[in-house]
Image (cartoon, rainbow, N blue to C red; front, side):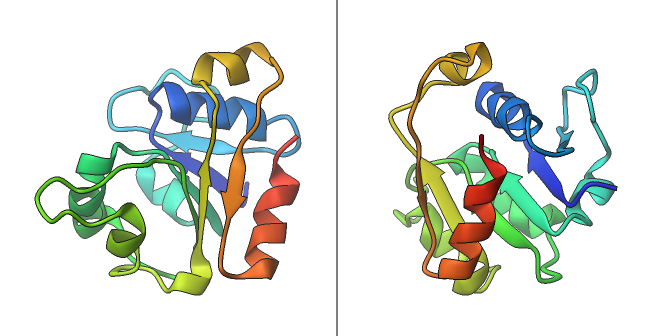
Length: 141
């Protein structure tokens, strides 16, 4: 059993899964793509301690309301944007479902295609909790 899973198998989710799988077993789940290495159903993915959520910004709230139950998971948000209906940043939306100390964010001047090809790239990782930051940091090659 892995303790880390990527939720969302779009290009960015698959790229993160690829990168994370270099250092440890990493699971991935998606509503539509099931022919991916280490694919699991959503229930198994949500049982992991660490979740990398790579779902488009406009789908986040609905997905959280429909699928997510907080059980002390550590969440790394791998999307950016503003919710169109409310004008809220993703951090504000996630904090309605997850305590701030369980949240981290990843962003950067990076493209999924660069990550998949193993090209040099850079990402920015952030969390208000230093311990959580360190835990997420060690996952990346």
